[in-house]
Length: 61
Image 1: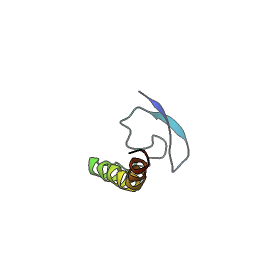
Image 2 (image 1 turned 90 degrees about the horizontal axis):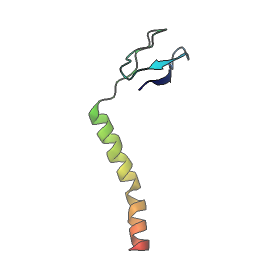
Image 3 (image 1 turned 60 degrees about the horizontal axis):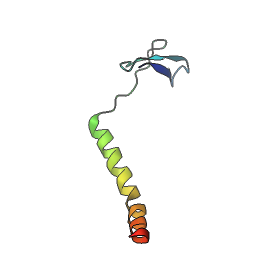
């Protein structure tokens, strides 16, 4: 599945096929996220939502 992606360096749009690691126009290398970074992001999101979840459980429980 391809979509349009904008390069943060040159601001030109190009078709992203999912395996693009650099901009085809200026050569800007896109940072690659590892699986551990995604897990940490999900964990932090859940920890931030924990008080809201506890409050809803208190109200409706």
